[in-house]
Amino acid sequence: MTKNISRSRGLSLRARLLALTLALLVAALLGSTGLVVDQLRRTLVRQLDDRVHSAAVVTQRLPGLEDLVGDTQVRDTVQQQSIRDMYMARLSADGRIAQVIRSTEGASPDLPRLDTAAVVERDGEPFSAPSTAGGGRWRVIALPNGPGQPAGSVVAAGSLSEVDGAMHRLTGRVLLIDVAVLGLLGVAGWFAVRAGLRPLRRIETTAAAIAAGDLSSRVPQLAAPGTELGSLAASLNTMLDRIEAGDAARADAEHSMRRFIADVSHELRTPLSGIKGFTQLYRMGGMPARSDVDAAMSRMECEAERLVELVEELLLLARLDERGAAAVQTLQLTPMDLRTLAADALRDLKALDPERTVTLTGPGGGPAGGAPVLGDEARLRQVMSNLVGNAIAHTPPGSPVRIGVGVQDGRAVFELCDQGPGMTAEQAARVFDRFYRADTARGRTPAGGAGLGLSIVDSLVTAHGGRVEVHTAPDQGATFRVLLPLHTDPSGT
Image 1 (cartoon, rainbow, N blue to C red):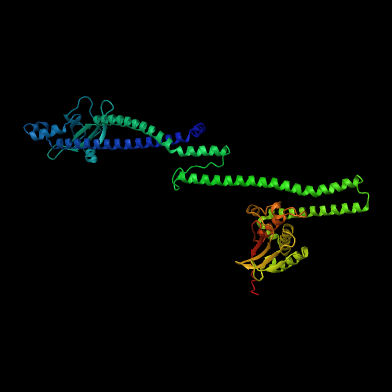
Image 2 (spheres, rainbow, N blue to C red):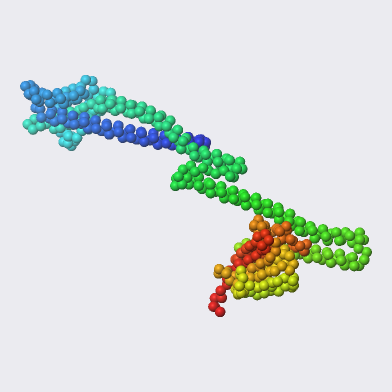
């Protein structure tokens, strides 16, 4: 049993389909052939029974063979009914053969006991009886003698040899025809199955190409979308699109990770190198005066602060990335108004650069308005602080800055618009990437940060359910817009 299963599994799909089809055809042909032969045999036997019955009725009405002399009509009837292999006889009341009216050459029917009671019980129904010689069989009908005749019965029997011979010849010929038909259908089926499976071979070829690394390969549209092959091709192509997208995303993630590690290493190496240099200089006696030591310690403190700030920013981004959508659960959300933060940002800008002209307006201009939100005030202040620091670091001193706050299109808006050198579209698309600095376009100062400020802004605003937009062009300045969900007080106050 196991060997047969293993062999069937080893066959190709084409061979299994062809074998299954041929098996069904064999079963159908044999079943239909058997049914036709059986019906034909029943018809022939029924016709033989009719002839035997007619012969029995004619014999029943005859008083004896001697009465046939001079009666041509009756004689012709008997001759018509007395076909070849037809046996007729009269039986006594106890069932013994009293007179053989017509005998056959060779074998005759081996009659059962047919006394008067048995004949009446059979009621003229035909029945089969074996032959006295050989393996043939007979169809027999027994009828009681007619009126005015002595007690007894007449028997007529017809041999089934011709019917059996005709059936044997017919069965042989039909089987030969079935074999020929099966052969032709097998050849035709082989080519039909091969043509029908051609699309699957194309799918196999495509799958092999993909397995070899060609993720751009796609299964061609082999059939209508509603068919099995059409649905299979569409499903495979959808799966391949996702695999290719996932592979591309993985490659981008690996590239971003390598770039991130390189940027982190660079940002950490710079202050560490400074601290190490001052310590080596001190150990080598390069700071003989107290003032030199104080200056070196001050520089080392600045570098350490840069390290602490960088590490804190990285930890904040890591926590936001790790929590993802659940980051909002860690925020301490309370009702607040962005107008307060905008006023603080205005004061910070004037304190950092008193020469600047800083104005407070609504989004895009006009009077400033309230912008109620549900947010973490400390984190949103960090957002405003980073945007202010970005404007100070990347715009010329004394250049004007506009702060806009209010409600627009059903969202609370805070925007900071500078008149600096602006950015190109490519730079604007990457401005929120970590460690990205548009140095050539934004004029980064030596006191600039590590390029994480805008990334933190984007992550914090996203955690609040909002988004950050930048609108800029070369020599047109830059406008950073923070859009947050508007908070409505349920009490209506």
